[in-house]
Length: 166
Image (cartoon, rainbow, N blue to C red; front, top):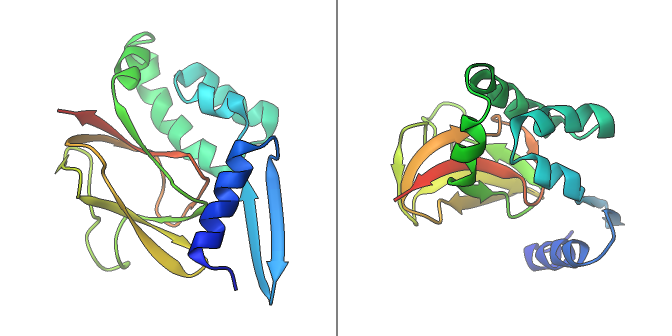
């Protein structure tokens, strides 16, 4: 079984090296860490690049949900999403895991679009290795967009929320 501090250290190690994927097995537990390529991280900035990156690179499933959301505003205003998204704070996943909007399926989500948050507001849970990790907003502001779907696998560094900071 992997310990949380070991997982964090491995994520940091993968992030700081040229290794793009790491898979380990120990005592029946399996850990897989994948680092998205630089083009995926850069392509989050502009909707047209973001939409085309998955087809060319066969990116993981998480890329598809934000792309659908990014297409709607792009139809009416091509330059506006670029300017708006660059001024927004991104809350990113600190680890690989499963994204949950609420503490259980029958409770309300921690936050919704339009909700005001502060630095200590819990915005979601990331489950990794059967550990539930609460993620806090990090900034004071308003939730503008939720980029991940409930129950979806998220990657280390993947943007989960856009917040208009105050």
